[in-house]
Length: 422
Image (cartoon, rainbow, N blue to C red; front, top):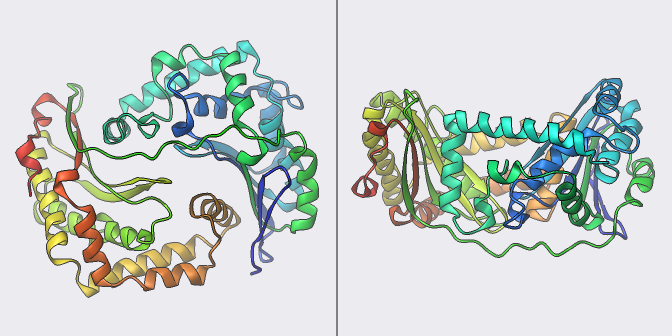
């Protein structure tokens, strides 16, 4: 496997290429360094609105039907997503279809036409997507958590936007957001598979020439988190859903590997502390786990679970007791070794397809600012010690900083401040 190729164009676009001689496919992603946290107060949901509406027609593919037919002719896969800090348009094809994939994705990013009638139809689709999210307890309890944990900052914005704002968006709003966002310095292009950097750069050149070379400033102010307790009743639910979270460091923290391993020990597998205590020993829930949500300058270590309403207070108390036990005593050597093995396995598995390599390249460049080899990433994991995990547990799992969002029947949403004291 060759070292990844990395360059910065005169216009400011970062290009990443990894040649994989053993595959016959190519994965390509156009990443825009703008997500929901870069929206202004009157723009909530516009990053996601753009992700949808560029697919409603471009100069080369003027209708949704034309775009759909062109996508099917590729014989591969094309998709897009929006996050809090990025939007991404990506695809995977056989290597001989790469020029067509570059052209299609490139037209989405440089030449959308924003037909007003098409945008009205797609706006209704997005409103249905918002309604669907509100109907899914796991999604909605997470949105309620983010909205309070980072309250007062753009990180609290729901990626889908708020119904009252999205219902007003049309072609003028889409065009204005596109014009100040989709610019060369905001773009990262990542590709992996059966391709070489030189010919790939030649394919990109006509596309990149269309992008404005200056970018409007978009460095959001650093954000802080706040403790909170939010009980939200929903009469139509049989179970209560819960997200409980602590402040965590961002992507570039020197403790990122230790925090990842701490999350795994806490709730990352069937032998994790939370799974064994809450499900296996006490039967309080069917599913429980922990995960990290890191961003540029902040993050959250979150615990999620669903259970019968009558069990919710007990579940919260037991979960916080496990956090307190980690703060007090740290981890056992065997626990840490299991977590390290899981982390190493995940890394190795992530190297085994062109798609996963493309996503890994972009993630490292955008969020970490550097490209690290598999050996370097493995070494970072191996270097974590039990003392490191004890230190980050004592720093992070502070009950005074906890945020808790509970969603369920009124009977199941009566978490009290005293329940948050381990």
